[in-house]
Length: 361
Image (cartoon, rainbow, N blue to C red; front, side, top):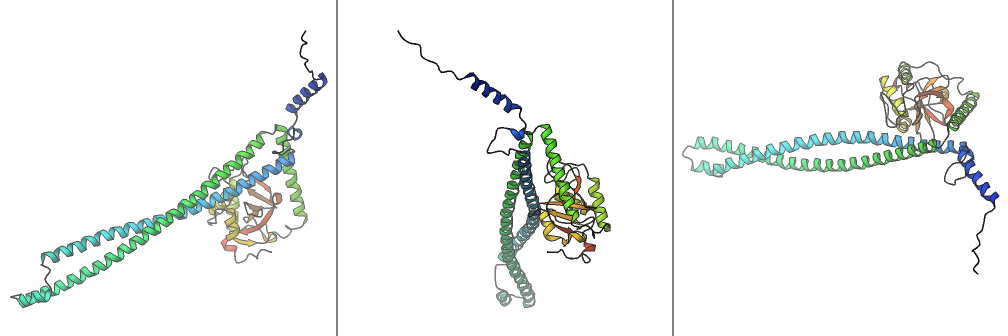
């Protein structure tokens, strides 16, 4: 008699416990979810990851903006070279026509040297005049031939320069495309991470950001750094602040410089353009090229540059506050000046450059 195969039964308590854990895992808040080594686990970790992603996106945005400026400059150079090539080519066509006409005229005249024509002529005076004209014509033809050779050489050189500039343009465009792809990847990753948060977690995250910004601002003000800061803006500074104020509430869009949306350096460059001053497009170039002033000497209208890589910029509006375009998903807003790590301050106002004390190292 065959025995029925024995089946092994899990204890009901084990099965029930497993089900309860599974159900609990679907309802736990993000911070207590089942650990995943490839993902941040707490709100503090989430915030750090988001800051890293958005920071990298902003760095890539400024790279994209810089490449866009280079593309525009390179295209302008190509336009100039193209016009020069076209003019040289047109001159080459005219010179070839003139040289060809001179050759045909010489052929019709028999190609006989002027001194021979003079010796055989029955009218020496007429032959002498003809010889003089022939010599002038020959000299003119010689000059045309020289000009033809020079123009051909110039045209070849310009064409080679244009080819090199075109190669350079393609490299810059590739740099811009690479930066654009990085921006979109970083923003997509940040939004995917944010999408995993519940509404209450998003609120807690926002509150955490505000609390940390307030703490940083309070510590900054406690140092007395603003005790001697100027409160009066220059004429240009007032116009820049007024422009930035009018943009409050408009969305941050990477690569944008108005009028409906801005990124951080798009806002500051357009604010000063509204004041009649053209400044570099990117935060890095604003930091490199504009006059640096000490924080203790800044005044409304100056630009505060943030982070060690100068990847963010804001417009100082006084009373320890800034107006800036923060990051994707946010709008242009007023914020504490010390809510981010300050690198330094620059002054775009050319009328005040001579009076601005040098930034302290």
